[in-house]
Image (cartoon, rainbow, N blue to C red; front, top):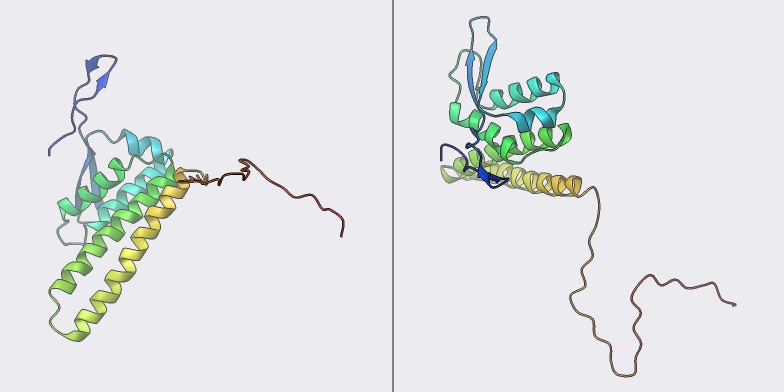
Length: 181
């Protein structure tokens, strides 16, 4: 998958959107040099501030950078950037939460890999505990994002209501007045 499909707008097909990617390398200083390519308008709109955008991109870049002087994992960096981009964050809070979700997902997969290759019961127990915590954290983040995007609105759906013959049903808000004793 090298790009996204063209989309229909006004009856015509737009040119395919080129997803954002990053080229990341450590310089001699040591500093991290980040070059963003492609369409990263979604992230730019969501972050709404140049410093937030720069911080978000550097945090995503560091996910693939094990340390100064070491090679940066291009696929790890671009997976995280692609995840944030594809989640289409609507504001800075969503953009930062999506970046955290990308990091937690990567750590979860690393622990799953470690668990699969554990050689001792101690290694297995440690990897299993970490994997469990990370998986629960990711699920909580998904729930938080869902709640945040719904702006706290709750929907109550009634699947089935049965009213027996001769009974009465009331639909709506019911309140009881304070009667006598």
